[in-house]
Length: 259
Image 1 (tube, helix red, strand yellow):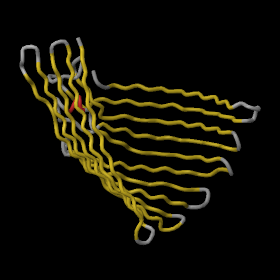
Image 2: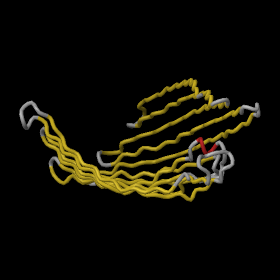
Image 3: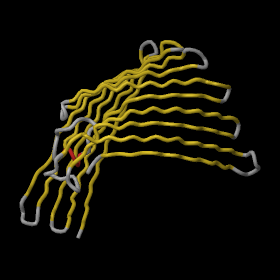
Image 4: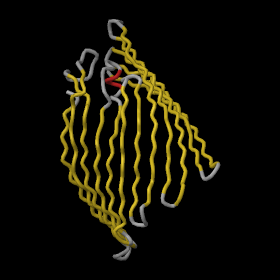
């Protein structure tokens, strides 16, 4: 009583070149088409999505202590769904969404032991009529010949999924804030790594029905968090003809979203 027929096409092309006084150019584009026919008992659902992505990035190393990269990208999405019920009633859903983003990122080496990466991303979603700014920073300190501490902070945004946008566009972008601390030590045949993290989720999509459907009431009142740590130890060749590792992960997470 269930059938699925899917066709997918993906095309990608890119170009890289150096020019001028140590400048590097990276650019590219991609296109994808995803077409699906679903039969659920006597109902028929047809999905058709076309997406394009354009990107350009410039990089320059001014010295051994400073380099910068910046660029822009443009996403275009056209999603359509046709639903034909047993009684031959036909319903159409869908949306068009264009997203424009620009970013800049710098690498700064204060010394042979201390370095930082600082960046910011600005993004505008035409469908949601929303402008977001995402700062991101990481710091690394070389504590020894074979060891390093690092700390990273960043904000990230993404649009709600197609299964929600096809029914409603009255949303904000879902977002999360990440804070990650890491220590790693390596030497011949050995790796030790420990990492702790905290992630805070905001503006997650919620709805008031069992499943997301056309008559659901949607909002962005969802939230959540994830925190924990990972430990990893690997040793190769210390005992003849052996390579072994031990890892442990701890995760505490809660999320209020969907229904």
